[in-house]
Every structure is written in C-alpha cells, then in structure tokens.
Image 1 (cartoon, rainbow, N blue to C red):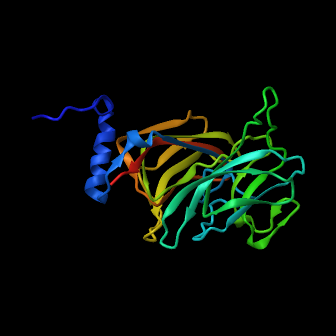
Image 2 (image 1 turned 90 degrees about the vertical axis):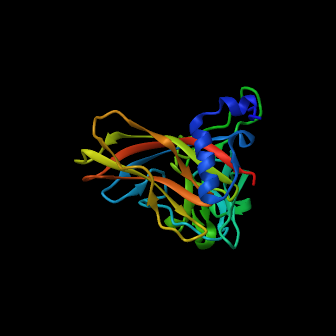
Image 3 (image 1 turned 120 degrees about the horizontal axis):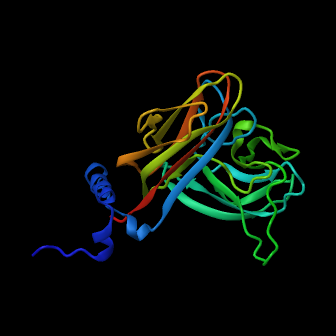
Length: 283
C-alpha cells in the first residue's frame, strides 16, 4: 500500500525533504522542519571592512572577528550612556564540557554605565534588541550609547569593556538591535540555508570591490572555518547580490556560522544577510 502524506508533508518544498534525507544519511540524525516551526534570519553591517577578512558585524573598536570562548564567560551587559536603562532581550547559547550548545534567551534591564549581570551566562551572544515597553503609546528609546554584552573578566570603565575582544555583541547608538551576521546552531538543530544577500554601502578610501564568504566551523570536533558556497565579489556602485542555494546549504548542529568580507584596498561599508529554516533533531 502506498503511503498517504499528510497535508504539511505533501506541500513541503522538495528542497527541504532532500535536505532532511541528506542529514539522515550523512549525520545519522532524523530532523523535522514542521515541528520546529522556526525560520532563522541573520543580518549585519560592518562600516570599516579592510583588506583582511572581517565578520560582517559590529564589535568594539577595531575588532574585526569575534574571539570565541569555550565556557560560559559572557556574563554582563553595559552601556556607555547613563541614559540607557531599557530592558533588552539577549539571545545566545550556553555550552557544556563537550562543546554542545543550548539556546538561551533572557531579558536584562540596563543600568547605564554600571554593568548588569546576565541571569544565565553564555558562551555565544548572537542577537540583542530593545524590548517593547509593555505600555501603550510609551515605547522604549533606541540606544543612546553603545550597549555591549561581554566577558567581564577584565572589568569595565565608563561603560566600555577594558578588553575590546571581550565584547561579543553590541547595539550601536541610535540602533534598537544588534547588527551581527553570525550565529551558532545548537546541539538539537540544523540550519537549512536558502539564500544569502551581500552588498556595499558607502565606500571609504579607494576601495572598489569587496569579496564576501560564508563559512562555518564544527565546535565539538575543533573544526577550522570552512567556506560553503563560492566567494561573492561585489563592485562599488553595484546593487546588492543575492545568492540562492540549490540544493539548500546544511549547517550541522554545534556549528558557528558567519559571513566575512574584505576589500581590495582601503575600507568599505558592507552588509550581509543569511536566511533559512531550522530543523529540529527528533531522533
């Protein structure tokens, strides 16, 4: 007797079905997109990409790439302005002794230039945004200063972490959300990437083209950063470039993912965005 598909299965994109079958064959995990019911969109900007690859994200000072930690050291959030007392949402992951990531979201009320402690320390901080006030017609304000989530090992001065590399995610002044085109995938999820879009904003210096690359690495097994998909080269003055993955690109569980970019000379302002579906491990 032939199997009768339920409606959700019958209308599922064939690319998702192929990706789920591939995960089962290559990684011995059974995953489901429907039960997870969550898409993942990551976007970011970097206003001063130079001639070495940097993450398309906002970090402290001249930091171009995140310094990753292997324990839950990200424990604080602070602003450079005493006016920032909003409640923010922080999303990231904790890590265990084997390198397995677990998604964790939490709300934190800022206390200006005085550090506020996270209720759940993290190993990855991938997104922050200012929450709604909860009161009709009384919105919370955008960031006045730079809001930083960081590893507080070396302390903070006037709302600025003493070690720039300790900062893992920021909300820039006048912004309401972090701009970080990088994320991590938990021990119970896969990310089925459908497409990526990259582009150049206001160019600085004499830069006339930027090269973008999407890459991921295996946390548990100590993997190096590996590109998936080809490099994308964009010229100054060119519209943003969209690249559709066919078949879908599979980011396995317990992986870090980022878009990096470099200019041919001088600096350039760039943006990037990755989109896809999360698939939950069910067996």
